[in-house]
Length: 267
Image 1 (cartoon, helix red, strand yellow):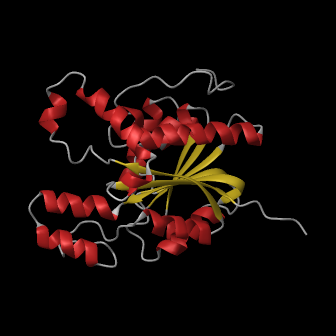
Image 2 (cartoon, rainbow, N blue to C red):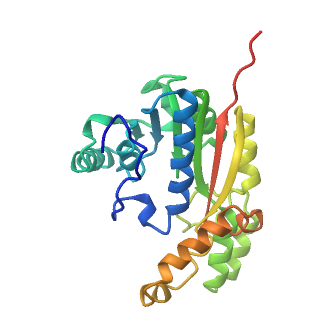
């Protein structure tokens, strides 16, 4: 694929791509479209993209394969080592840079107003101050830049606990301000679509779309998907169809919010 025409064809599909996974296909499709639009509006085929908490590059490497320059900020040295290896194997080592750090101290390691797009996936659940995390992510964006935010949804956790027969835990998650079902809950915080939208708007983002992610994928028994040849394809179609419908946002395992940094008015 030519670096000069990174979006004339879609990257080849393989198991390392977000699109190949039921868990991330919806996010990848929405993100790729957003990057295409940003590239056209910016008049540049190669964007500067920041992936906060990007780990081993599940999104960063495919984004680099589209022709963009990606900086990954992650607190784990092991994840960054895996990122380096994955980028090299994918032939995009020259377009992927890993930096140790986190969203709370983001500007210790990256510049403000320096990126066309920022990915903040699976981060807000683990930071002490989600509002600060969002403000920092937005602060790294250029005016009109794209923010892709993915966070754990409250409703999906409540339903999952209830279907597993843990009704007390389901009720606790519903009542808990952080959306936790108990001491053994590995996720420190969950959100509703309204909470995430409010955080973005408060940080100067015009919200363009909200998608429910993994509405069904985490609830359908694996045997039903694995034994029927066309089941995964049809489940992907169902996930994509339900993702944009507000009625399903309340029951999604994750919520994806896409927005643009508000353009400051002059004078």
